[in-house]
Image 1 (tube, rainbow, N blue to C red):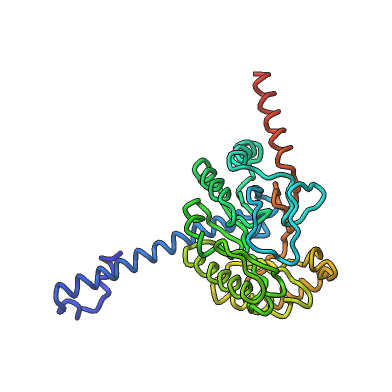
Image 2 (cartoon, rainbow, N blue to C red):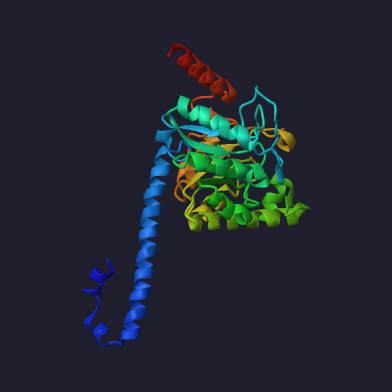
Length: 333
């Protein structure tokens, strides 16, 4: 390609010194190499997007995902969040029936990958924030080593994203979801009670300023690194609804792939608010759609979700069934 390009360069270049020509081709070939990397990365991204149920509506009925609950600790307190580590009755983010160790998580992937040939995506979405737990990185690394073809993803509040992005990439993560509920610290202060950043607690406006800055910094860094990025926004009536469009506008500026507007689940400090109706959420999606692609098929999954988005399977029950099947097969052979 570099040689072919030489034929279309103005012949005046032939009059330049050998040194000048050398530097020109060195720069040209470097640019071409980068372009090839971008093209290759784009093809890989498209393959991931086609089979990731959170990024493509067509995939939500054909591709299964597995959320591994290995991250109990959290570095912020959202005013709408209640985390439960031993709950089988609720189906929402922040809820799980059990917390796995990295070894237990890998063990379950090994069992489930043989039982479910539609399993394409393994993610960590809590019940706390994945980036606030070292077990997240141990788990992802072990899965990526054994199953490099699986799509690994993480859902985070973004506070630690600029600090831990390199570790995520080393662990094989190719897509990430960042929950961003505000553009301005004034609004963020109403959504978040406190944060803990690099071991130090912050509250009020200072906490909001740090969080908002780190979230958008992390989004931009992730996109620059070639990750597929989704932004989740919880629509909280009277609190951040006036900034949702601004989030979409900035998402477009940064190059975010898709946005997911979620209706508030009224609980904790916002238990007195009403959950936005489907019509209200759809109206907001219509407002934001000109700026960034909108996800409209989210199920607000648990931290231990398994199956397609239309399914709600129990991880350990599926693992047990897989093992019973193996034992039965061995007994009849």
